[in-house]
Length: 256
Image 1 (cartoon, helix red, strand yellow):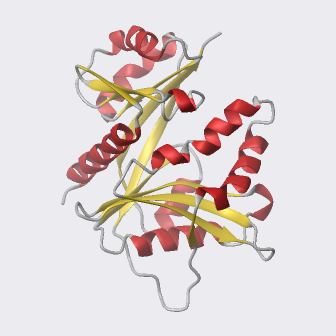
Image 2 (cartoon, rainbow, N blue to C red; image 1 turned 120 degrees about the vertical axis):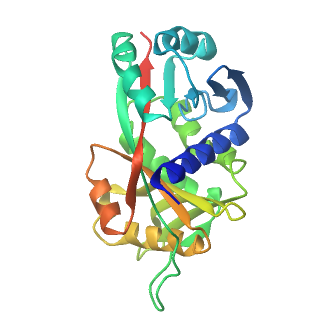
């Protein structure tokens, strides 16, 4: 299958995931808005998706109307050409722009004897996620931290199979974690939120998470991730066999 076709499949998977986990779903020509009042602080669960043809000039007003009265705005544009056209318009409206690199490879069975991560419940994962989120956002209100931790409950609706992976340290505490989403019927899966606790880096834990995710997706010819196009992890993913499919774009703003 071509790179273009694979990129289209990843976009379809991402929009399907967003729709399935949404508490509220509103369509418009060229896209849709997802909302979840239970996790109002989560940009992931309260944002505008553009997966068709939209005039970039219309997006600031559209997002204002769709996401009011939330204090943030987020717009994900899944077509690279349209995303690039949106940059000057949305930056002029006060948005910051992030290029998202979509990378993929087939799943593969892990070699014998190699360590694998375990599948855990949100209850087991919650303390580590809460500590790391607080470390990232030291000034955030506790309600925001709670939203960012508990939003994983909504993700359980997003795909046919959703797993939370964890690697434990020598004290049996969760040292690294990731989400894996699978649709085995369609032969596609995704890994998301690969995070190692800050004082547990450089111990191979992230590699164990990736190896386990690929092992779980061994029957999926297309297994993908979304990385910051300007950050170093993309090089690490490339060394693990992930190839570049293309770019998508996200835009975010915080209201005064």
